[in-house]
Image (cartoon, rainbow, N blue to C red; front, side, top):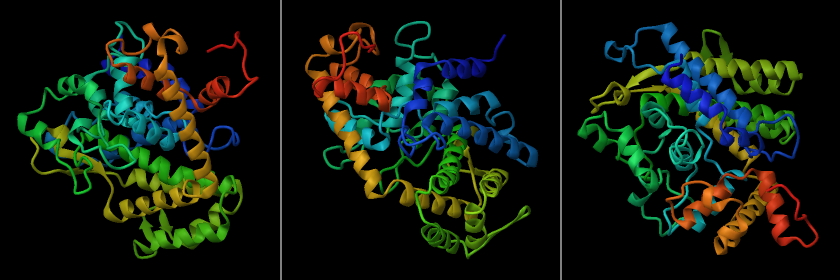
Length: 404
């Protein structure tokens, strides 16, 4: 009755990990209001943008002949976007850094690597330990960094390397089995900064959709929530547009710092319109670009943007980071989240069978104790992590009848 990708999509949508995204930080904390994005709404918007990218490429036509039949089906694109943030722990990247610090010598932790682990191991569908039993192509679509943790020097640096976890090496080998030996070898190539250089066509489309959603939609949240003054926003927009000569001209109209800022700070209706037009501009200019040196079409092509559009999007992402994350008030909350995650991990590690409900039946039963405790903490929502932290460390909080 269904295609394999339709089954992938249904299993992700109905997964516990997907539901938990509604209570996980995207940029701002989940308790700070009702308007701004959570990880769940971000993932839904990402899926809409991802399918839009593929639709735009199909409508324009002119794709290389050897790419016929290889553009991702709509169901696959939606599923990859729905799933791309499943592995992020509570409290955003602060929680990710804290878990990596605790797991540094035990196989590490990285949010994208945990996404693959959830899909392939932890979710409960059918046989235990098979996760959602994902298709090869879904695995490849979420595999942003096809390099194992063990390939990196992790003795220094606070942040986790961009990788997949070695516990899922067999899953990655299975997913890559259809590629030539040369293609598999090239997938391990890294930049001077150590980041993976290559990914599949599907993954590149998902990643671009994520970039657009983050770079544009977060600006809407920042302005609507009054997190930044107009002068701050305008100054950063001037910097962003200066990187591309001051203006972006498209068939649908021209954009510059002054006009975009004016629309953002006009009525909520006008703000929504400029956000929509910016997203639409990036979507309609998506293109397929060749990558030299690969044999298979899924690796030989990538979805990207023209240089000016890509540069502007990069600047908008930096703007979102500067206004929403790199501020003392947010950094303090991030530091608090790191402490919560670290102390929960250390406490559960002391007596996991006693402190973690149904520990013997949860997660990857074949994994190490460290990994299984890590899986439990990483799966928590922000509010649940805070609740458990208070039960453990705040006198007078919680009862023996609390639902855990």
